[in-house]
Length: 352
Ligand SMILES: [Zn+2]
Image: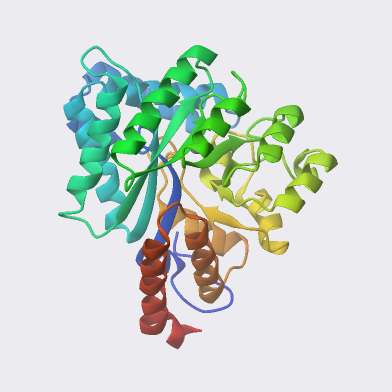
């Protein structure tokens, strides 16, 4: 796609590739591409399965359930500490290569035959720390509670997460609720405990229509929300919830290609990011699962510019706003803004 922006004649694809980007919503296991899965020693059978599953992306109607099937293949590839370490490093390097200056990677700690949940977290933290030697990207970790976990397991997961957060406070910054949105529910007590312990909260919200749960989540006022497809009344959200949202103005992590691929939004132009831009509501542009949905952060930026008539200067302003929403320290946020301002002076000023 070599589209040009309608306001300034630029090669949008190239521009977005070079632009210093911020990623706030990327799942580790969903961000692995096919090549990485192969390097991790996936059997031919599982790679075949993966390829077969990716064919669902060509179908005209897909279901969220089918998309969630794809993650199982990636989970099988990260069952050992060694593979998990390599997977985390490769995802970080992918983002670094396309000029992402800040990444919040998220993952659900799992216990496997030779790995406890604690070791799972330790391994990802080690990969993040080691990347500092070869990459300039700043990386933080959000740990997820899977919606399908029963209450007892979720409480145990949180205890492990809080213990590890005490050990690595400079890396582990947030807690997320994710997984198949048709399963399980939002347990406010769990997230209140996490918040009291100093974790920031980002919650997958309104991926399916569930006004009752959306209301509970909004009233909890997380630091950020993921997706929020069925929130705006134009997108089948309830007027009551939209009014609560307008009071709270919680930043929304928008993952356009993910929503389209899962079949919950028809096309880029129809994405609710349009309403957020128009109403000057806070948002970020994210990939969700770049491996599963075969996208990149540069591509997500490009689609927003193309489909919502966003100029380079406007994109710059959006990304500066995104810095405010991230879970890094104030000093780190200041450094990110310096990097963006430097880019503005070197490249954008002449262009705008
Ligand atoms: Zn997600």
